Image 1 (cartoon, rainbow, N blue to C red):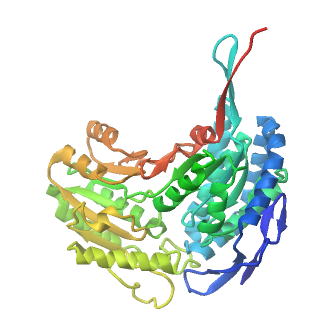
Image 2 (image 1 turned 90 degrees about the horizontal axis):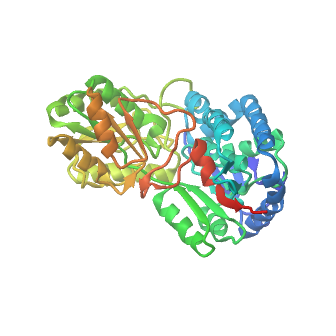
Image 3 (image 1 turned 135 degrees about the vertical axis):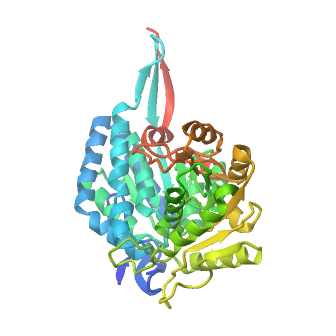
Amino acid sequence: MREQRQFYIDGQWVDPAKANDLEVHDPATEDVCAVISLGSSADVDKAVAAAKAAFEGWAATPVAERRAVLERLGAVMKVRHDDLAEAISLEMGAPIDFAKGEQAGAGPWHLKGFLDAMDKFAWEEKFTDRETIIREPVGVVGLITPWNWPVNQIALKVIPAVAAGCTCVLKPSEIAPLSAMVWAELMDEAGFPKGVFNLVNGDGPTVGEAMSNHPDIDMMSFTGSTRAGSAVMRGSAASIKRVTLELGGKSPNIVFADADLPRAIRRGVTHMMENTGQSCNAPSRMIVEQDIYDEAVELAKEAAEAVKVGNPRDAGGHIGPLSSAAQFDKVQSLIETGMAEGARLVTGGPGRPEGFNRGWYARPTVFADVTNEMTIAREEIFGPVLTMIPFSGGEDEAVRIANDTPYGLAAYLWTGDANKGDRVGRRLRAGMVRVNGAGLSAGHPFGGYKQSGNGREGGVWGLEDFTEVKVLSQRY
């Protein structure tokens, strides 16, 4: 069992102001796998003071020098890649091959996008002969990251923050804090000046609230639930902090009758089940044209039943457990609600998969004949549960159902008609739209509309979020 009770503040590992142990559980076994400390407002004060003291010097560091330190971080990430992956697999149950390839691999992937963005970012530009537009760092920033894609979200916040010249305090999720502590070691090994990066573990009501309320934190960047994001905004309001939020999603996946149906359904199901359904941009609402609906349901059943569930420590392409007992209970409750409200259970259902009597494993589940008013079509389940909704009114009805959600993070659609794909894609109210499984490149803008948040992470958009705009007008 790991014992990691210290925080990383001002370039060193320090004891918390007051002992407050928290047990971290292995989702695969439910056993305690680590002990950390929960921080307090006193720990936040110490970390913020370190970040504030470091800000002036780091902000004045030339962009080329900040870029060089980030390149060293990339080299350290390569050496410590497996350490990150093993921590992620242990803390939140990601299968080890997935943890190595997608979860830990997100760090170098995002770093590449940000390094490219730094080279083309307009740090200064002439507006008129006497006016210059200058992009300057916001200041001290508070970063709160989730448990489901821990390194992905740390990379999307820490890298652009320090690239822009900000100093930061990171609070990772207390459910999955181990990879963040490895990340702190990477920052130290890369040679960032003391105080530029600080880490304090803790829960939202204590450390998260202390950060949002802190008068010396100039900006909060939060990823998590919409409910918690609202709390960050309320806490930040008194000091008029800048707040960027990446929140929940209930992403539509429209399948038209002219699509490559087997490919569309297979990809839609496997994407939904990836990371055990614990992704904010998961295509959780499959909206299928009536003419092909019955066939699509059968194909979805086959695809879901082909998804293997297994131990996170085993190699292979299976999915692992849910991250925590609370998440397991939430998913089970929503599956029961779907059945009670009249959705047709196609496969899966409540309880653990066959062969598991311990660990927070859920059954890959598909519901058909769902209406967009049902709870399972409205609420973010965050588990391996797909809802299938038929439509018969052409593009207009498909778009209406897709946009009928409080969220707007991602959207997906499948069609054999390029004009239709472009036309429908432009009508979907979401920050990211992918047609026929098209991928996204490093440095793309990640974020959404409505209750999915504000701001954009990644590339030049991520850098912009951490900068202020100044106009310098001179006459001599």
